[in-house]
Structures are given as C-alpha cells and as structure tokens.
Length: 208
Ligand code: GAR
Image 1 (cartoon, helix red, strand yellow):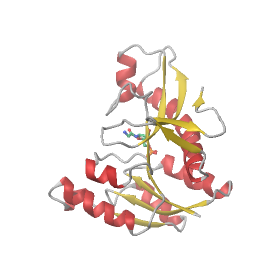
Image 2 (spheres, rainbow, N blue to C red):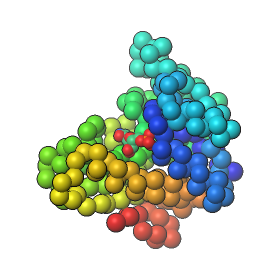
Image 3 (cartoon, rainbow, N blue to C red):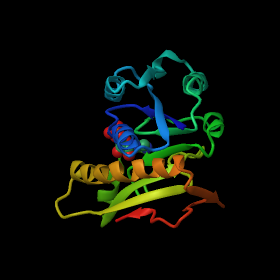
Image 4 (tube, rainbow, N blue to C red):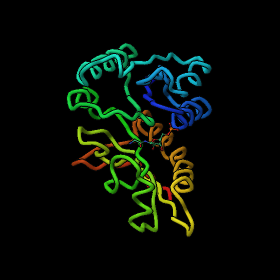
C-alpha cells in the first residue's frame, strides 16, 4: 500500500474528494495523515472525523520560513509518505523542502498553467477576457505553481460569470481531476520524461 500525506490550509474539499475516492474505489493506498499550516483549517476536523491522523504545524510559531519548512518536513516524514499531496495548501515552500519530495509531490492550481500562477486566478482570467479556464494538477518544482503537468480540466467562461461562479465551475472539475491524478500516481501509471508527464497506457490527461 502506498502512503499519502495531504496538506491543506482551509476547507479541504479536494482532500475530501481524494479520501472518499481512495476508499470507495479501493486504491492501493491509504491517506496516512492530513496536515495543515493552521489548527483552524476546517479540513483537519473533517479528516479527524474520518479517523485519519491530523496535525497542524502553525506557520505563526516559526520566525523563519526555513524553520517552518523543516518542522513541516518532520511532521510529513513521521508518516513515511510515498506521495505528498498539496490540496489548497497556501504557503510558498522553499526549494530545499520541494527537492526533498521531488517527483512525489503533487499540487492543484485553479488555472490552466502556465497561465495565471499565484493568487486571484479567476479574477485575472476574467480581466484578461479568457473564454475558457480550468485547473491543473502538476508535480511540484521549486518555482511557484510550476512543474510537469499531470492533468488539466477546461470549462467555458459564460456571459455574466463573476469570480465566484467561475471558481465553483472550476472546483467541480478539480474534484474529478485531482483524485484521478492521485490514483494514477499510486497505481504507477505515470511516467515523467523531459519534464513531460505521460499516462503509460495513454489515458486522456484532459477533462474538457
Ligand atoms: C482550490 O481551488 C485549489 O485549486 C486552490 O485552492 C482551492 C482549495 O480548495 N489552490 C491554489 O490556489 C494553490 N495555488 P479546497 O481547500 O476546498 O480544496
């Protein structure tokens, strides 16, 4: 069984989707722990109710980011994960931390990367007049919201859409592409070559 550790900062709806699908579809994996950078993260309470180990590594308790990163790595490594899943984890992680989990850390970002890394993706897409938006699951590299793309979803921008409407339409697709990407990872279906991710048996890496 592969061991998964999931990091959240807030409500954790992507984490919930992954936990639920892992259990209902019988993946060869367990979610060993859910960790957060704040004890108040709603996702922690949900995970604890499911009987999953939880812990908070309070960002505020550390003066320097390097110290926070080291404490977080210690909390993660206590669960000996094969895969670390960032699910709405809203802290920038240092290069040393990222290298420690190179090739075994996934992130989801609510834009069609490489467009709109960083915050306020839906607002920026509306301002740019985008006709389609989406989400990206990618392997994490030291550059923010960057790295080999595992899967993307695309949805239309409709007349009258505001930021909230777009966020909701994209989030619904996140709940599909993130569990599927994690499943592929733990089932050994993904291969990375030259910075590109391929599904070994050619499954579509696009939800449109
Ligand atoms: C999701 O939309 C995710 O793509 C985004 O935060 C939200 C978390 O929601 N992540 C980022 O912006 C990372 N750069 P959730 O806590 O309900 O999963």
